[in-house]
Length: 188
Picture (cartoon, rainbow, N blue to C red):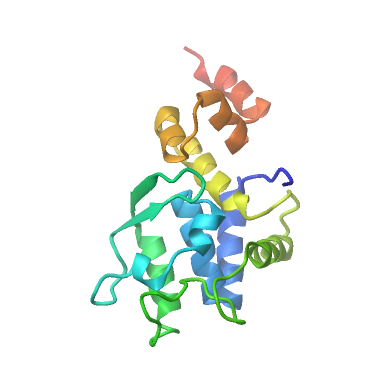
């Protein structure tokens, strides 16, 4: 697997969302959920309609996922942007049943990882992102922006299910420039 970067620039992030929304509500919902949940792409692609909706068809306020890689259960609150993106997407699938893949392929079944990579890479190139982008970019973007917004590193480490702070910092792409910025702006 090739090393990919988070999307660091919020303007680029917004451009990606706008582009994806204009091309496919499914792809937009996948991206918005991915960057706001920190889920691995395998877990995103395995979601069913019933995983994200309650018995009345409303988007759940809290989702529970059993991670494929670790077998651990992850429970997380669902924010407004995710709720809106999924609701808008599911409005195009009024007859979807609870056991159907949330992110269904046009050929049937769940969207495949390779196709998700093509979608994200194509969108990134379309909005001028030059960094290496892949499906893991969504998870890294989640961690990176949580860190940049001042969330505790230990909490981010736990959200991403990492074993060490140094691994999390490398994973989210904390650069030497960011570390230097601490020295230059602290000025005690």
